[in-house]
Amino acid sequence: MGFYLVVIVGALLIPLLTKAPWTLGDFIVAGVLLVIFSLFYEFARAKISNPKSLIITSIFLVIVFLYIWAELAVGVFTTWGS
Image (cartoon, rainbow, N blue to C red):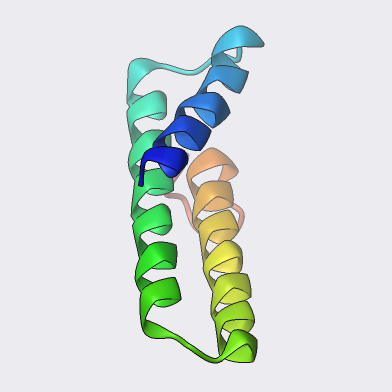
């Protein structure tokens, strides 16, 4: 999990260094979202031994992550982020 925390902090540094108009709440939500999906991926990697199933599960996790991220950012299909 240590590697993932370094990657998460690095990912959160990008909007900080680019001076994106994020509030503290935005950083917290993004950090929690990244940690949750990292844990889901680690759980899937530990439980799934078939490489094809792991790839499919990983793609599913990425799609769900991106969907939630987009909803929170701009509310593509709902008004979560609005």
